[in-house]
Image (tube, rainbow, N blue to C red):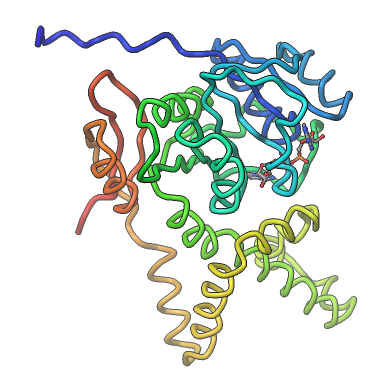
Amino acid sequence: MTGFPVPTMPAPPVGVVGLGQLGGSLAAALVRAGRPVSGWDTDPQAREAAAARGVRITRDLSGVVVLAVPLPAMATALDGLTVDPDATVTDVGSVKSPVLGTVGAAFGSRFVGGHPMCGTEHSGHEAVDPDLFDGARWAVCLEPDTDLSRWLRVTEVALDAGAEVVPLTAAEHDDAVAAVSHVPHLLAAALAAAAGEAGPLALALAAGSFRDATRVAGSEPAFVTAMVEGNAAPTAEALARVQAQLGRPWPELVTAGHAVATRPTAQRSVRAPLDRAALLALGRAGGVVTRRLAAFVEGRLPQEG
Ligand SMILES: NC(=O)c1ccc[n+]([C@@H]2O[C@H](COP(=O)([O-])OP(=O)(O)OC[C@H]3O[C@@H](n4cnc5c(N)ncnc54)[C@H](O)[C@@H]3O)[C@@H](O)[C@H]2O)c1
C-alpha cells in the first residue's frame, strides 16, 4: 500500500436503448457530463431528437448498455442490435424481478438491474430533461451473483447523471416501490375516479391537496398498468397495508401519518467498503452512495435519534 489513491479505470461509453423521457434524459445528462453516449430507438423522431443532443445513433452498443424502453419491450429490446460481448447491461424499468428473470437470465453476471426514482407523468422524447436525475435516488441491484465491478460501472453511470445510488436486491426494490410508488399510482387513480363520481361541483373546487394527491393519475395508463401488473404481489400486499391503515380511528391514523411525513431527515456522511454485504447494509438503513473512490464508496445515512 502506497497510501495514494489507486486510479479507477476510464469511464466506458454508454449505449442507451429507448430515447424517450428516461433514456433521452439520461443520454442528455451523460453527454453533458462528458461521457461518450450512443443510442437507438425504434422511433425515428426520438433518434433525431437524441442526435441533436449529441448522441451517436447506432445499432452497435458497448460499455454500459442501458435499456430504457417500456417494461413489456425489455425482453426483446436488444433483438436486431449488436452488443459488445464484454458490455455490462442494465435497465431503468420500474419493476426489477421480471427484468431480472428475462434480461438477467440472458446476460447472467453481465446484467445489473437499475431504477432511477424520478420521471414525470409525461412521456416520449418531448419530455426529455437533462436535469431529471439531479439529486434523484437510483436503485442499483446487487444480487448474490452480481459482478461487483459491473455494479460499480452502472453506479458510476447513475452518479454521472447526477443521481445518488441505493444498493439493494431486486426483491427488496419491488417490495419498497410497491409501497412508495405503485400503491400511490393506484390511490391517485382511485381518488380521481371517486372525485369524478362526486361530480362537476367537486371537481370545480378541487385545489392543492387534490392536485398533489392525483398528479400521477395523469401518467400514460399503459405505463402504469405495466408497472402495477408487473409487480402485482408486492403491490397487493402494500395496498392491503394501506387498507388496514384506513380502518384505524381517524385521529390515530392522521397522527401516525403526520409522524412519518414530518420525521427528521438529518443525515451523516459515511464510507462503505466495496463489499456486497456492506453496500446492501447501507441501502437497508436508508443510505445512499454519492461517490465512488478506488477502494470504497462515500455516501450518507439517516442520522439516528
Ligand atoms: N416515466 C417514469 O416516470 C419512469 C420513471 C422511472 C423508470 N421508468 C421506466 O423507464 C422506462 C422507459 O419509460 P419512459 O417514461 O422513458 O417511456 P417513454 O415512452 O417516454 O420512452 C420509451 C422509448 O422507448 C422507445 N422504444 C419502445 N420500444 C423500443 C424498442 N423495442 N427498441 C428501442 N426503443 C424502443 C420508444 O419509442 C420511446 O422513445 C420504462 O421501463 C419505465 O418503467 C419510467
